Image 1 (cartoon, rainbow, N blue to C red):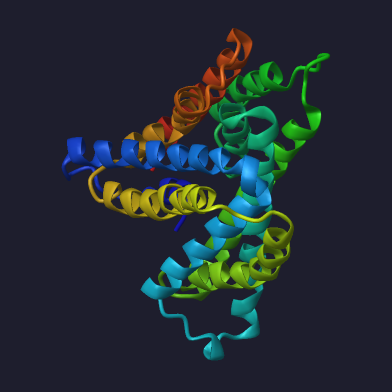
Image 2: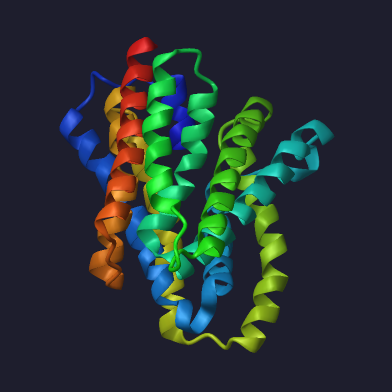
Length: 293
């Protein structure tokens, strides 16, 4: 189950070790964004397509090793959300990394974060969430305000990644209802790999990889996919939905820091204010949603 979806259904865990749970949730966010930064370091050799190909293939290898999916027993009703998840994976990741190349890690991740936030707000029936949506919307206006230096293709790519993430959450819910455990995610990951293997073959013929670039892309796969997922599952055993939601909502801040520390990407005060407003809106929504459960 996606971490944002876990938050929406209010997974219990408040009685566990809050300190350890908080450390794992924070570690998941830091690992995710550090992995994305490693992927960006490989762009000069592999490009976003090459990095995403390596990430998708390695992630699928790990998932299918851990989760044994009996493909021969899947029905047409089970295959539909699986195929949808596979395309959501592709859209989300290629658009995100292409956006990172153009507008930087912090902005790209923040705009992508609008996907799960939009799903959460759209499913709410409380008037107060309209205020949170306005706060986040103000942040978006600060980030995408048109100007001579605005990279609109990069912004549109990040927003497309947000659409992909939103679709992933909705389809993951459907797959979870039709397939036990992580079988839907594992099956979709393998389907994604089937799509990416020929793409990777053609791409690497024209963009020969180096061992260093492949190592960076592999590190991206581990830190941005495998480690965060494992840490999130462990953190949810110890944290309340409110605490986990707030800690997850600050992921764009980790993206800004990793962009600065590892990639040397600096943001202006207006951009930082926009990111802050989006994080604030998401955090307030998380707190109020958990208290309403």
